View 1 (tube, rainbow, N blue to C red):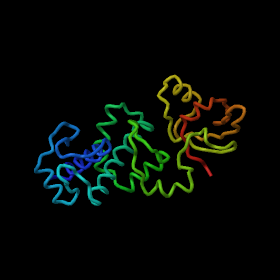
View 2: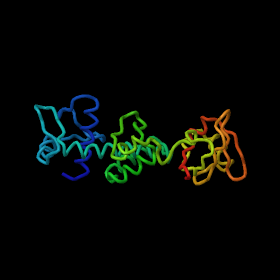
View 3: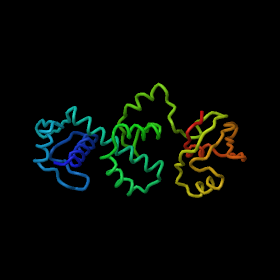
Length: 216
């Protein structure tokens, strides 16, 4: 059995477990391909799970690898939705490819970039990684919405998440694009930012869509 199929079976077991108990009778891959009794037997011999009658229980080895696959897939979905604005259909196809190559270090880097998201775009839980545990004492992430910064902060625009195209056009016309440096002058009674020599008043809802890296 190739490594990709092993990972796809582990992913399906994890997803089925989120819905309830996992049975060898109900398992099938996302493409509709059946998981045969031979597949189940081979996976059990490899030490990824054990069977109790028809119920499948992941071993420690299986749990660790399944978590990595699920985490990689759901972080890839978040990255493509929040940063790359990929369509839902392309997002799912690409996430299925990314999950097989995203290792712990890359997953943690993506997670940190996105501010340690809790859920994927479908509302499913993203398993926490080592980076999330380290971040708990200090909740300030590498990238955060501009609306969360304090007055006087300087930052560089990382990406903009809005899918409201007229708003995106307006921000672009103001020079608010990835890589641009901004200064948040005030937050009350309204938000005033400076970009270049221009000072601009923006609604808080718009600032929530502008993700920045703070400049120390």
